[in-house]
Image (cartoon, rainbow, N blue to C red):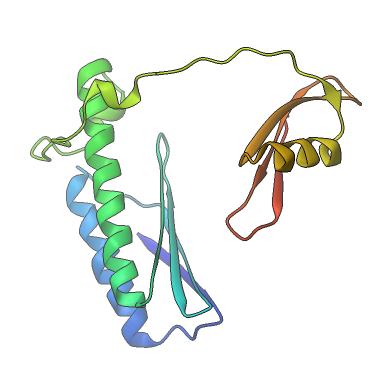
Length: 180
């Protein structure tokens, strides 16, 4: 794996770089072939909180995890645990549903234990809402979202009629999701 480690408000020391490469490198044991993908790591310090975000784009799978802790080394440990859970969860799902040749199943080693706590009930839809999408612009949708106290809001774009989503980001700003 090729590591791309960058820091915001933190200096990436050789010790920190080695720790990340050692911990994230342990994920290679879950795969038959060592992945050749890039590992994008972003470390950030905000208000005494250490944030680490790891993204591993692969051919048929995207692994991504983010953790926040008061200690960067602890945050690295937590993010690697989260990535391991994602891999085990994917392997469990793949073993259940996709048994044909060339599927994701053949990306993982056979001796990897599936996620023990994964249960089909975890992904059960427990509530369905139906409503008409009111045509509006993104600013009006943000106002509606804030008025309702939600973290996201689905609306019909008044300009092109597409279904869009506005959401509140962790940094307090807003994002917009629109189809291509």
